Amino acid sequence: MKIIVLDGYTENPGDLSWEGLEALGSLTVYDRTPEEKVVERIGDAQAVYTNKTPITAETIHKCPDMKFIGVLATGYNVIDTEAAKEQGIVVSNIPSYGTDAVAQYTMALLLELCHHVDEHSNCVKAGEWSNNQDWCFWKHPLVELAGKNFGVIGFGRIGRRTAEIAQAFGMKVLAFDEYPDKALETEKCRYVSLDRLLAESDVISLHCPLFPSTEGIINKDTIAKMKDGVKILNTSRGPLIVEEDLKEALNSGKVSGAAVDVVSSEPIREDNPLMGAKNMIITPHIAWAPRESRQRLMDIAVDNLRKFVDGKPQNVVNL
Ligand code: NAD
Image (cartoon, rainbow, N blue to C red; front, side, top):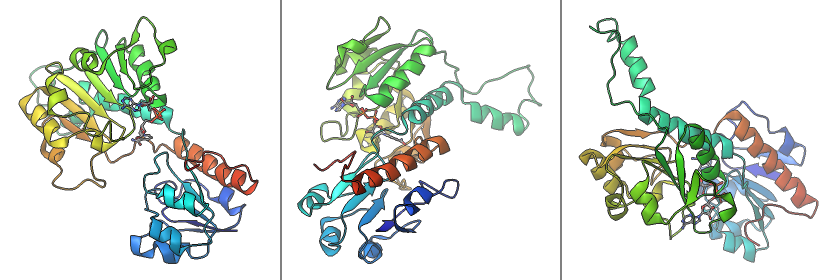
């Protein structure tokens, strides 16, 4: 079997091995593939992996030997799954590989908003402490989390794990989910309406998928319902936030800080409104990327193809 990986670099920049896929066929791995080369590179391959390179209906029609598309990610919006289904192509994704990594990262963003560790360290190295009159100084208000409310929009795998860590910091959790599971409620973790979450949370963290119903869920109207000085975290998907509205709220101080790992268009455009906003942390979509989590992704990606070859496809998203 011929196996092609169209854009393997972010999954494996060199610290992992492709040997699991090599064992299943003749493997060619491309670091990146420009759109105009997708058809040529897939050629007569039967199995194709993509992370963020689009596989369109046109590509599907031009590559009739393709039988399996593996996504090296959870989100599979880069693939025309309907066209794949019509052609009898199985599309498999990796539904859960980075829950702990993304939850940990979300809290790293929150702690950075509360303490500005990096900025304080840089100030010390630049000599500000050596030349300071007092034995300590801080550049921003420092924030204690214990006793504050942590609002989670999308109480799924990552949202729940993030909420567990927030509780370890002494925070109370307010969760909003389209499909609440009341069995998860405890004294310190309650489902609430979206309006109540907006009104009572000190920190709001986004963990719902990007759907038409969630696109722009953070906008000027929902921000107006929030507490003054709220902090906002987004490690889910950029378009959940209307970035121009968040920028205005940051610059006015309504939102005291925000930290996002994802933006509306990636890589970020230089004119993205959040680039110049006050008290804004932006990182380049790395919450998923510790080696441990990428290894798990690799293992599941290999297993997806092995199960497909065995006639028992798993993690199929276009049944
Ligand atoms: P999940 O499916 O376990 O949880 C999503 C939750 O959102 C579910 O409980 C679902 O019921 C809920 N939901 C659906 N529609 C909703 C709505 N309209 N309003 C409120 N809640 C709604 O998914 P997960 O594994 O927790 O992942 C969550 C998101 O994290 C993914 O969709 C993905 O976009 C993002 N993610 C980001 C990274 C990163 O590197 N930054 C990595 C992995 C995943």
